[in-house]
Length: 268
Image (tube, rainbow, N blue to C red; front, side):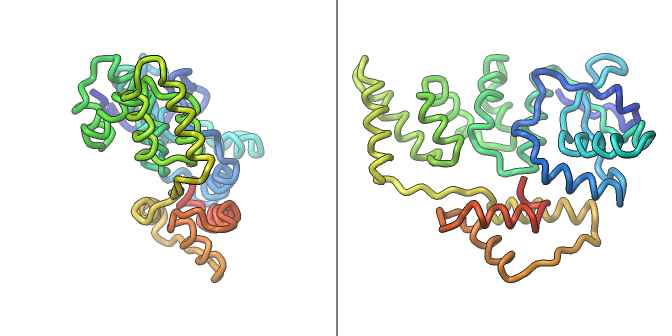
């Protein structure tokens, strides 16, 4: 069971990165720059989360962007942040990996494919579906679907899902078609489904940011900085509404870039 052992103030050199505990997406340099400015002005308002595997041996679990920002600050200011605030947690490696994913998911609209490897890992570590679901704040049925469809999922289907070009519901439909196909014809069934997608028979909605997630993230920012303000234009608001709508609107990438620049707390 994951437990918080204590809050501490530790030398930054003691915080290591474990090969099995990683940030689930590449660092967003714009977000690192935002944290760099914020930490220089206001300090580190939220401690990093570290796993104490052995006494005084710390591995980063949550706060990858903030740690990168602090390293940038230290490169420009010798002696700054030699020690930093951390929340020290304890648990088995599989529990810490699950916590790592949970912390990432709390900060962004994690794609369902971001959960796949961790859920399969926890299942292989003999976690029950109910335990996995409770830990990740998901339903047992959601976990069961992943365990049912992912192990045999065609890599091309998984890649489309991860890229946001295929919804989870459509992905499950394809997987069910494959499972129902006669033995030996599975590959042909996948290729037929992919041809249908290329033919435009399926229109997918892509949700990068949901209203619920936006409200949660803005609330988290207000807890950290109750006086936070945004200066926005009508175009900024239009882009935010376009992204919240989740549809394949024209110039979607441009709208998303504007939202990232104007509302850095809302989008990774």
